[in-house]
Length: 155
Image (cartoon, rainbow, N blue to C red; front, side, top):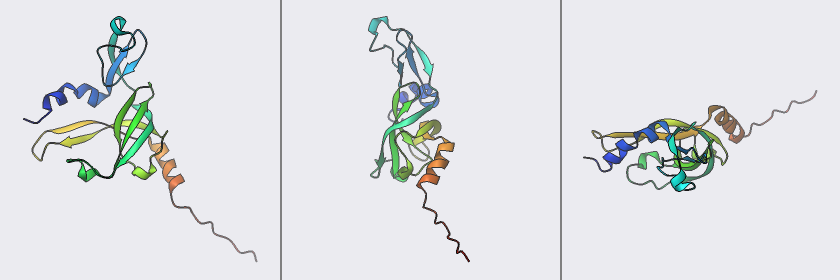
């Protein structure tokens, strides 16, 4: 049996659907889910909450020396994303070259393979974030090589 398999199965709902919790009493949102609001304590009333999956890059780092099992992905970016609801989470940024990532860049959740135990083992899926497409196009245009303007000779 794979190490951490039981934990993996318990966290399917949060990992697959970006489901956390919300305190009805103070309107705080939590990810990963919590059973008790740290602000309200015993007065808290917690319910499940599905996040929008949209947010912005709060900060990020590019990983060049990847840990075992992730060598094939390097270099890759890991970011703290601030969701529209105000909650922050750590995630990998995909579908963009690491040098094009910027703080404040709008991103959205996508469903991706996280890792596989081996060729015949369990494949673990979950959320990662990618730039929102319209913003990615603008980033490529703005960061791309400068175009030389052709000068026409006057006769």
